[in-house]
Structure formats: C-alpha cells, structure tokens
Amino acid sequence: MSGSAPLDDASFLSAVLDTVIPPHGAMPGAGSLGIERSVGEAVASDALSGPSVTAAMVALWERTPGFAGLAPAERAQALEAAMDAASLRAMLRHVYLAYYQHPEVLAALGEPPRPPFPEGFELEPTDPELLAALQARMK
Image 1 (cartoon, one colour):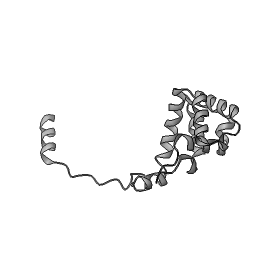
Image 2: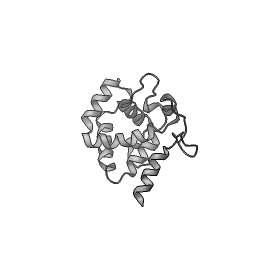
Image 3: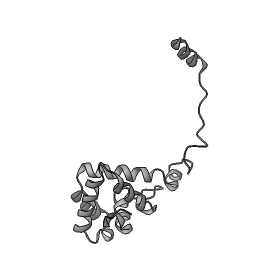
Image 4: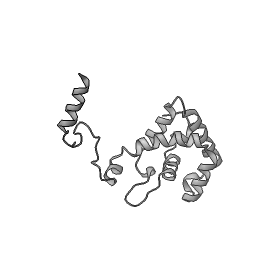
C-alpha cells in the first residue's frame, strides 16, 4: 500500500480513526468502518501534506507501541503530542472524505446511503420571474 508501517497497520490506523472520530450515538466511529486502507492510501499519495502526516504517524507509532490498546483519552493525548496542528488538519481532510461518504454514516445522518448522482436530489421548482430577470440582464 503505502510503504510506511503505520499507514499499513490496520489495527493502529483503526485506533487513530476512532480517536479522531469516536462513535457517538447513532454515528459510528471512523475506526469501525473499514476505511483504514483508503485513508492510508490517500495520505501516502498526498504530495503536499502526505510526508508531514506520515512522519507524524511514524512518530506516534514508534513512541506509542501499544496505541491501539490504550484508553480513548490516552490515545487522544498521544495523538496530540505526536501531531502538529497542520498535520492533524491534513490527516483529518482525508479521514472526513472517507468517513462522510461511507453508507453507514450517510444512513446515520438520514441521507440515502448512496452518492447523490445519478439519481440526484429533488429540487424546488425555479421561479419563472427570477429566470426572466436573469435573461433580461443578458440582453
């Protein structure tokens, strides 16, 4: 996958994902969805911020060998100590993209568990007066 041990370690990544998006009510934790591989690949292929995120993940992985077995508060503390704000934001961008596209998350949000297209969403009818005003401006 990525060639970086922490990004290839599903158990470690699952614990990291559950630390940044823990389960809450009907919302599943990010670590329970099986998105570890896609997040790891996205981080590894991110030419801009991937190296800094990977370096922070390696530091966390090396400093905290039993990370996955720690209590959630201890994992959060270790994650905060290993990652600077920019690396954390960069990692979260990849996590959020994978998380909020997952069918279980969409269903928990009350959305249909599918991409919005090709079925699309229902749109309100257009007000013909607004359209006429736009067309008049174009002349």
